[in-house]
Length: 148
Image (cartoon, rainbow, N blue to C red; front, side, top):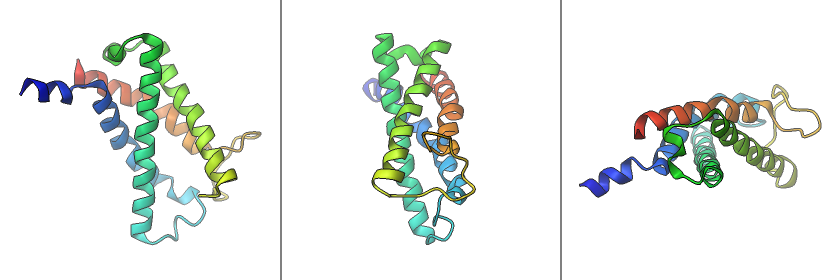
């Protein structure tokens, strides 16, 4: 029983859990800002947003590990410093810029609708970037409260 409890309170599981729960509604709220998404079949849109949310959870996990490497501790999230939260978010922003560029420019997997504000020069949508500015502090806060 104690082994199971230890797994439930691992930082990684909680990062994935809270990242998924917070990013899932964000993905659905972004639907109008992607070309063809509002007209997509209901189930196709759900699958697309679900896959994107799994990717978001993996981005959060990679960002967590980056900060853990820099902090030399997986437990940094129990008492995070502002520096750690900023780095958690910044690493996710960099990954998002790369993935959005690849998906929109290289692979053509999706396109932004005209209402999506994009950043000049890099051309990345503002909403995917705001996602990784707004949600990471909430993820860290929830995880720190869960596993203390």
